[in-house]
Amino acid sequence: MAKLKIGVIGAGSISEAHLNGYAENPEVEIYAICDLNEERAKQKAQKYGASHIFTNYHDLLALPELHSVSICTWNNTHAELSIAALQAGKHVLCEKPLCKTVAEALEVEKAVKLSGKVLQVGVVRRYSTNTQVLKRFIDQGDLGQIYYAKASCLRRLGNPGGWFADQERSGGGPLIDLGVHLIDIVWYLMGMPKVKSISGNTYKKLGNRSNVENLSFYKAADYDPSLNGVEDLANALIRFENGSSLFIDVSFTLHAKQDELNVKLYGDKGGAELEPELMMITEKNNTIMNMTPQVDNLSFNFQSAFTNEMAHFIDATLGRKDTLSPVADGVEMMKILTGIYESAQRGEEIHF
Image (cartoon, rainbow, N blue to C red; front, side, top):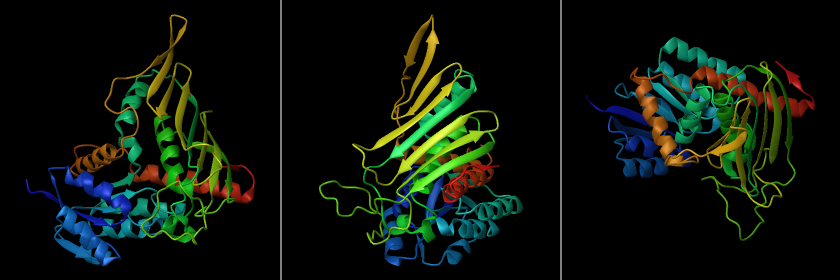
């Protein structure tokens, strides 16, 4: 079978993970790259052997031989590009979040149904090995009913600046950038219960903190310390219709001793930690047991997870598997994210 021709729209930092994942797939040819910055598109095309370079995504989508596209652009373009790609008859892997608003998400969902094509939302942690190992235990009932979960991704210094700090392009700060991953993975492992209410808070107290010396942090490709229109910190308590609840807190910058990443789930038969390392907790013979599975990666392995995600996307486009992160899940996640921001703005709990 001839290799599937893939295009990537957006040649910024996250595109590297997509391109590496596709490069490892023997069924794929990295065929076209599009970016507003032509030089950046040329550099990525040269590195990955793409034969077509564009600065206008319409030109890329006009290629009849193109099978699928990855969308790796600013959040405020995700809906527009996804819809255009679907209407052009392409399968779509859209980086998280699906878009900026619920209204946009519903338009994307409509376009998916009309096109008959696959749209996979790029919530890469669903495709991580440690997640899938834990999911199998949960599906077998080892944790019982998961009634509480909490997740934290706290950066002491980590506002990436650039478009990440631009409210118009990003749609928000750490909540929509980091929180989307944590909320999604916990919600997925909890069985995706329906949301009942959300109480959220956001804080903008510390700014970019570009004055800090002797401590490095990730910076966007278009880093500009003067841009800072998003929150520093967000937290939320999410209640679900089945009685379970989730507490989440995320930050770009915080007066904290160290960075922190934790994902924990608690059920009536057992508990689990997904991050910083996979572990399951149970009770046997009147003794509490900590169980550590023997797997290659107990924590989230960045490139391995993206490679898994790209492979699953290709399988889904060929009808061999169902995507683990369909557009319907992306719509629900936008309801949660925008619900947190709305609750924080109103200063009160909101109900669904």
